Structure formats: structure tokens, C-alpha cells
Image (cartoon, rainbow, N blue to C red; front, side, top):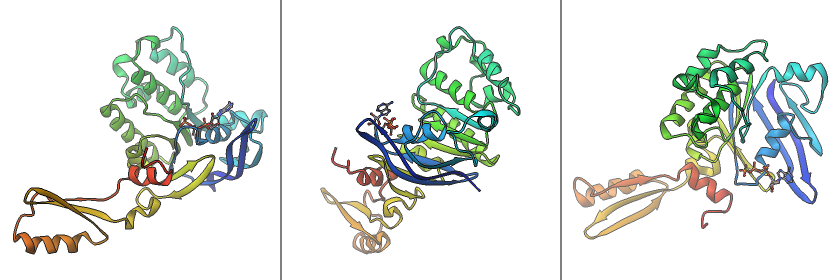
Length: 283
Ligand code: ATP
């Protein structure tokens, strides 16, 4: 069974069609990244899946349950999912550990409080008031609250915004550990390197529609895209776009008869491909 199954999802706000017919199937245990420019419809889609927004039409099953349903089934379902929203809620005058303990009490099968604090790197701040945390530390707390319930399915909406590079790397290793334990993860992010590092598949959404779903390696024909070989020839840097960089290097090798000056081979990054897909490469 898929963790998430969506067909023909639509949602408008007045005249604005924010989500215009989305189909999405995410397998259990998969890390799926939803990419798209500001206003593309990512948060709308994800919040419908989380049961926080209503939809106009389409079918949605999340862990086999329609998030718009209510009652006891809904409470049991919520116990199985973890959510890190884009905006943080105000936490008043509680400390980190008090807040995590409080949320710990909501779940039937939670992870250990200390273990979670440690896994998001907040040991030294466990007894600090939340309002005294930095932006990035606050975001780590959000992640801690998303995983304290030991969820089968975790929604992460731009989880590493405001993280320093070191915190992002340790967050990535936390996500990989969660994957190893079988957690399904739906991630939205504006960091293409994050999607590449973590996601089994990525889906690009633009103007409320899915443009493509693929692995990060294959997105937009990336795997077969031309590489650019460049080198120094006297005073000039020369470059050549080619589907066969090895042949170009062999040719240069015989031309230079040894080390090719300042040789580089560059393939398009996920970001290059993504920007092209959403038509923004000249912005
Ligand atoms: P971002 O990357 O900026 O978070 P997003 O892809 O998550 O963007 P959404 O928040 O889903 O985009 O917004 C999609 C469109 O719907 C936008 O044009 C937005 O202005 C509009 N929109 C979102 N929420 C509402 C709302 N509650 N009322 C009216 N319009 C909304």
C-alpha cells in the first residue's frame, strides 16, 4: 500500500486555482521532495494531506485514510503522522524540554524525550526558554516536535530554513536515520541540494500542476544532458558542450600531450535543470 495516494486534487481560493489537478503516489518508506517556486501550490497540497485544509475535488488517501474525515479514526490517524509546518507557533514561556515532554504526552508510542533532543542537536539548550532560542534553534525544536510521536509518515515543510550549514548536514543524517527505520517522508524545500541529498524521488510543481516526477538524477533528462568541458588554451578559456566528454578529453590529451590546463567537466546541477523546467533560467 502507498503511504500517500492522490488523484485529481483541486483547490481554489476564490478565483485563484492554487492546485489544478494533482496526481501523486508516494510509496511507504520513500522520501519524496516536492519542489516548486513560491506560490506553486506546495503548502496547499501538503496541508490538504495533513487534514488542515479542505479540498474542492479529487481523491486523497494518507496512510489509507481520507484526511477530511473526522472522529476517532482521525485521532488515531493523527497519532501516526508527524508534521513540521512552515511557520512556527508561539511557545510562550516554556523551556525546550518542557515543550517536548508536553508533546510526548500526546502520543501512544513516542520516542524518548532525551533521544529526540539529542538527535536535533539541542542538548545544550534543553533548559532554555523557547523565546530565547535563535531562529535556527527554534526550527530544530519544530523538527523535534514533528518526530517525537515516532511517526510512520512525516511531513516536513521547508524544514531547514534558517539552519547553518552544519545544522543542515546533521539534519540530513537524522532524516536518513528515520528512513532506515522505515519512516515515509514528504518534504518541501527550496534547497535543491537538500532534495538531491535526501529524496528518492522529486516532484516539480508549478502553477498548481505537476510538471514532472522523477529521481533527482533523471529529472528533466539530466542523466543524458550534455556536459561542458572547459580548459585553458593560451590566454583563452575554451569550452565545449558535449554528450561524450571522454572523447573531448582524449582529443585534448593528444593536443596538449600531457596535463590539460585548468580542465573541468561540469554537468548540469539539479538546480540548473529545475530552473529550466519552471522557466526561470533567465531570471
Ligand atoms: P511557498 O514556496 O511560497 O511556500 P507554495 O508552493 O507553498 O509557496 P501555496 O502556499 O500553496 O504555495 O500557495 C498557492 C497559491 O494559493 C498562492 O498564489 C497563494 O497566494 C494562494 N493561497 C494560499 N493560501 C491561501 C489562502 N488561505 N487564501 C487565499 N489564497 C491563498
